[in-house]
Image (cartoon, rainbow, N blue to C red; front, side):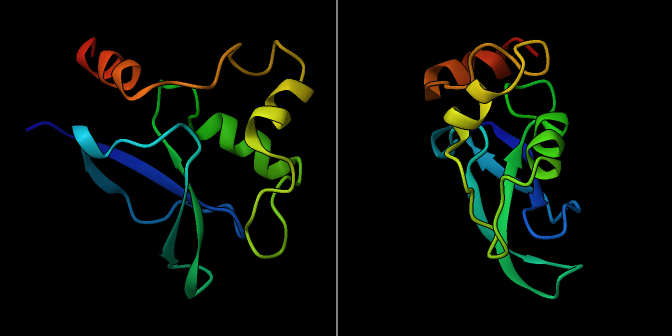
Amino acid sequence: MKTYNHHFFCTICGKEGIPVNRQEYRLREPGHLKKLYCLNCKREVNHAECIEGSKYDQAIFRLEFESGNFDSGGIRITPLEQWIKSLNSNEVPDELELTVEEWLEFFDKK
């Protein structure tokens, strides 16, 4: 079974956390928040799941983080889809929602 390396970025400090390998059947939607231990914050906090070259990569996370869309507890203030729609269409991909099948298709093309 294939596994894919996903990068996670802390929604409190913005630094990269510990990457997680996911199997095909355990893929999550772009920008999924997962509680992980942050090496910088020294506690368990939400991390945004990013995959380079996908609809929610490090660049999109950085835009979201720097725009202040995470509160002091690391939770999104504005839901991701709404936040994306509020941005200039030149800054982010037109569509962020992917099904698991579309995720698999994305990886199979690599």
